[in-house]
Structures are given as structure tokens and as C-alpha cells.
Amino acid sequence: MRRLPPVLLEDGCPRDLISLIRTVLAACKEISFRVGQGALSGALGSTLDENIQGETQKKLDVLTNQLLKDILLESGYVKAIASEEEDYTVAGNPDANYIVAFDPLDGSSNTDINSLVGTIFSIMKAPEGSDPADQSIFMQPGKNQVAAGYVLYGPSTVLALTTGKGTRFFTLDKTHGTFLLTEDFAKVPEDTNEYAINASNQRHWQPAMQNYINDLIAGETGPRARNFNMRWIAAMVGDVHRVLCRGGIFTYPTDTKDPNKPNKLRLLYEANPMAMLIEQAGGIASTGTERIMDIQPDAIHQRVAVILGSKNEVETCLNYHK
Ligand code: AFP
Image (tube, rainbow, N blue to C red; front, top):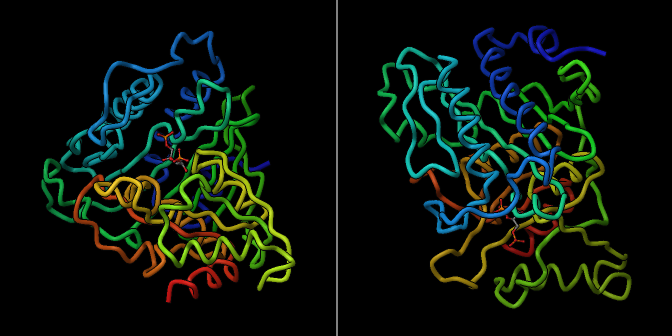
């Protein structure tokens, strides 16, 4: 089986970008080990702190954030980082070419129940001559990403990665500590009978999403004239992995549950990297009104509605929003 660096070199991926991706993965291997230790790590449960977004931080949120931050900043390959767990961006090497946005442990509420969690990352070029301390270097649309991926810590540790030449899966060989290519060019099936949404929010959704989901639930007796199945892992990384593997539609739509927070998922650390992986595998990623990767961010912790997955099903859902 092929290792990650030669695969990326064959794609013509710049050497400093490969080194940066390997640096991210070095941290992820360590996180994989810590997460795999479960209760033995002594790091399950919550801290007494909240992050800038008002969410209680899990001990593992803090630990994994520190790990990624330290490794990336010490590497010299990054000009600045933005993390879901940091209030502001953090400056790195002024001469580096890249900036990295990451969610160190997506789905961290799953850690206490030994369920799926993952690390999501997005890499963009830093504007030439830019100041590493200037947050606005992250205000670039997702289409500027040069690489995006996630590492899913499940029964096996799997990396989904794109550098703009398709989406690939690598599996961590834990005996040697190397990521080996296990699927070249993942392809999201265009049709699906599976959807993922937190249905407990139904009464708070906008009418378009209410109507779409009602028609899925009606199954063969409704306008869609076939039955659909539902899945919800409560970790985007797990739900998107399923969509990449066997198709489906995943959505976290706008809702009115909390008027101060109409959307849940973060543009820079969740929506953009997942959108790139999905598009590179032939799927679609939209907010309901626009392509996710076209959004011009105006804040590092900006949140957006997400509808992504199998091409034909996402298009059907978008038709309800027209
Ligand atoms: P946490 O990382 O705080 O557990 O949140 C995970 C997440 O951002 C995303 O990965 C899930 O799809 C979504 O939240 C789950 O949200 P609900 O708890 O509202 O279902």
C-alpha cells in the first residue's frame, strides 16, 4: 500500500504543503492515541470553561487544541492558525506560506460515550506580505483552500484528504504510525435514500426544510414515492464520512431555536473543509441559497447553514428552497 508523501508528490503537491500536512497528521496520530485510551487517559469529561462561542469545553477539546497549536506553530510551516477553541487567530512564522484553520476535536461530546470524533482542518495560502497577526488573512472564501481534510477516530483512524485532485482515504497503520492509501478517488453516489439531520429541531426549521423532511418521512406514501432512512452521529466528521463512503444528504439547517445563533456549524473549520472534500468526490455543498465555498467570511467563528452530499438529493432539497 502507498504512503501519503509519495501519493501527494505524484500529484505535484508543493513540498512545503506536504510537510505542513504531515505536521497536522503528526498531531492527529497523537490525538488518535489519546482518544483511543478513553477513560485511561484521565481526560474524559468537561472543564469548567467555555470557549468563545459559549460552549462548555471538554478536557479533550483543550488538550487536542494545545497539541495541534504547539506542533503547527513550532513547525515553522504556518503563518497563522485559527481554531474553534481559540478566541482569536494565533500568529506563527512570518515567512511561512500557509494558514491553517482547524476544529481539533469535532463531536467532542461523543468522547464520554466512546463514539466517533475527529479533527477537521483547512489549509489556505497566506496573502503575500501579510501580517501573521492580522485576522483578516483568514477572510478568504473556501474555494481558496489548497488542502482540506479530517481524521476520524473510530474503530480505525481514517484520514480523508483532498489537495484539489480528488478525495482520498488513508488508514492509519498503528503498528508503524503511517497513513496508507486505502481509497483513491472516493465518489459520492449521486442518489441516496439516507438523510442526516437533528430531527429534534424540526419545529424550529424554516418552511422549506420542514417540507423537504416531511416528504422524506412520508416515504413511499408521499410525493417522493420511496422510503428513506435516517442517521445522526452528532459529530459532523462521522456523518460526512458516511456520506463520502456510501452517499446520503447531511444537513444542519438554519433554525429559530436560539435567535442569536441561527446556524450551528462553523464556516472556517467545518463547512469549508467538508465542502471541498464533498465537491472533490462529486457531491454538492450549499447553504440552501449559495455554494458554501463561495461565501466571503466576515468573522473567524462565523456559522452557516449546511446542506451537503449526494448530488441529485442535494439538488432536490435545494429546489424546496427556491
Ligand atoms: P461538538 O463538537 O460541540 O460536539 O459539536 C459537534 C457539531 O458541531 C457537529 O459536529 C455536529 O454535526 C453537530 O454539532 C451536532 O449538533 P447537535 O448536538 O445539535 O445535534
